[in-house]
Length: 345
Ligand code: BGC
Image 1 (cartoon, rainbow, N blue to C red):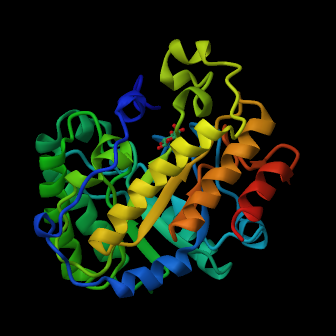
Image 2 (image 1 turned 180 degrees about the vertical axis):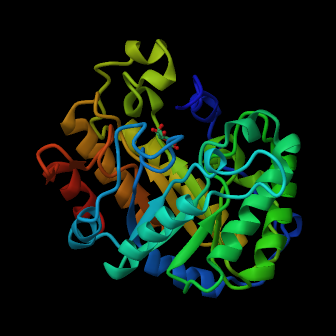
């Protein structure tokens, strides 16, 4: 699933407010159109552990038609759909994506749309690309070319996110170059599609300054938030044995906890303001091994920060290990859902 210690670096790095000078910053054209769209994106939920598994169902989640009306009725405005395209595409040029997989994604988009939910469609877990980005960049771009052409007629309820949490060997210079190249190809068929892009190091706030974005008005910038990791990822097997030592970590909303969280979001918010980019908190959540009271407090506090800074957001995730919904009892975990609703006001 997730490489060992995948978020360790992101959280270990010190979060220090950057000092910006007007002269040092290139001012892009105001992206008002994207700011407006971001307001409509509002608050969503990730359909995690389904289509970003090598095959849907491998990680225990197969999307069901009833999920979409449930999500809408709970008050969410969009779904973020993580997708493992690389395990459904040919390994050699032209890297054809399996038509039956496209049909499945079409179904997800249709279900979302008919229930009034916008969709952020991404690429997730292309592990060979993370290990050797330059060797896989052509396949990466060509997959996006096919996805873009396939959805060229879709209305703007659909947005694309080229890659979830660029990390490992995808450094900032490589990511900026590959992003720009992919954008150019995608813009040929989708001139006005909203595109979500986040910085390296697993979309961490402290790497926002390394993003070098083209002057394109239809971009939305994303960050993920799982801090403190010892709390949100306690007992998470994909974090390695160390995460077992974190079991029992609570989050109480103490003054130091709140002030750290506030500093993190202020930093991201200031970056967005300065660069005139709308901000999307595309993932945040605490794993089921943490106690529910702490999860609720943390979720509420993060959601409140997102709203205060005018970020759109998407909780990680719907019905798996972080799930706000219990697929066995077929009920929402009310305290979590409530935390997501209450702080949305
Ligand atoms: C990963 C998930 C993981 C989550 C929390 C996501 O980006 O794709 O597999 O559970 O982050 O670590």
